[in-house]
Length: 94
Length: 286
View 1 (tube, rainbow over the protein chains, first blue to last red):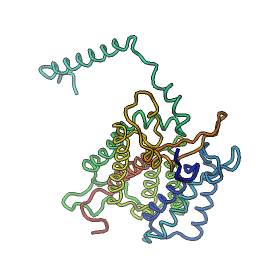
View 2 (view 1 turned 120 degrees about the horizontal axis):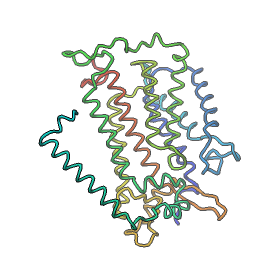
View 3 (view 1 turned 45 degrees about the horizontal axis):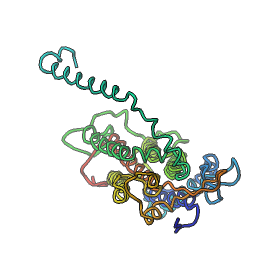
View 4 (view 1 turned 135 degrees about the vertical axis):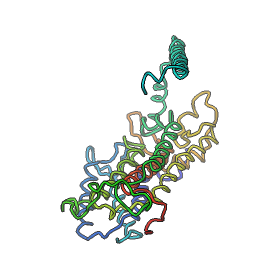
């Protein structure tokens, strides 16, 4: 079997897709976000990522696997960061 | 319909239709006698656990991917019809002047009266719900998530913003954006079937996972390049007692992205138009 991409690329692909989609939807965000709100969202996002866990098919740290029964949802974090970047790129202020 | 309306020619037509349907169903059951296969589940079990990370996703999109494609279209068409039929809005907006929208002033959104906890936690909640929706759609091939769920979740975030902030919704999805999103989603789903059709003559055949080409009697072979292009980005390792197997969900994640876009577009459009009504004016125009 020919493999053009690295092994287990499926662990990284969702993170990239979530990031790009986060940017996409972030461009539709309007209003101003204060620094305190930004920190709140990131903090809650990290907590939520640990609560949601990663799918059982991920086996590496890239995919969110830390140890048995303990993992984090990397696409969730990347989507949240993407939303902020999208907001910075094109989000409205009204 | 009253029973009295079934008298006369209409009643005869209804009776004949019922007899035909009853006969058809009855003969179908009679034909099943002795011809019931044990189902396709054993074949899927035999093939899929080695070839796709999520059996259920593989079954659904392999067995009835085309059906889901049509369902996705039905949702979008339903949204458009809802907009046409009922899109006058419950909130009085600068819409058609000649005929006022339904006057329900009690439904007017008043962001100033929103409790302070909602006002300040509304935006974080909306952003985290959107992130959650994106997590769900990216996990379509490996978990119970998928495009429909993602669409509903992100639409809920949109509705939440609408309920808390009114027209100052921070998730500012305009009608043009929503229509485009829905159209792109449906088109993405549909076009995902093209590689499979060209290779095997089965529309929506998953060329990335390629579950069936090694099966005796399968008409068509998937070229290596298609299997690589659609399979490689979503390849995962299945670590089993028997060894480590590489598998891919193939086009399932892409299909789910299309579904998600379509559902966000459809539901978002319904929410938008039901709340504010439809106007042919461009957004921002008075």
